Amino acid sequence: MSDSMTPAKRHECMSHIHSKDTGPEMIVRRWLHAKGFRYRVNVKELPGTPDIVLRRYNTIIFVNGCFWHGHHNCKSYVMPKTRRDFWKNKIQNNIERDLSVRALLEAKGWKVIVIWACELKKSEKENTMERVSDQIKENRTEFLVEREIRKRKTKLWEASHKRKNDDE
Image (tube, rainbow, N blue to C red; front, side, top):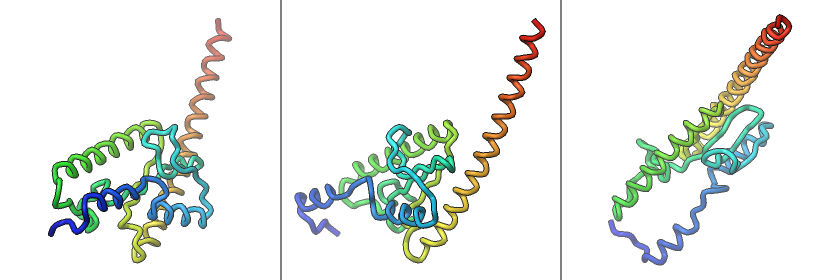
């Protein structure tokens, strides 16, 4: 099937696709806010400018479009019939960048959650968001435990360092 739009019309349509404040992002943000979670959006200081950052919960959420981020085995991820090499390379680069950004964030101690746009369809939205909510709360618990362990290690180190200085 050929493209029913002229190249100019296709360009106009594609130019209206934005990476911030997308429909799926807004669904997630409204749900989180309604459940009492407070967050920041598009934090530029972090790798990948995450869609949603919940500092208190040590959690980052990316809301990915199935097509743009190559969600395999998804009905929304269909390779276009035209310029296949261009689209294949573009989507593959997006996938590789997503993996790299995730690795950087996790190395900095963040917990990363990825929500796919197809998981936010009416029939799946509540289950998806409940799963995300549970994961955020679990991340908070892990973060607090890890922080307490770090504090104890610091106190032990300081105590042993003080004893060492007192002996000298």
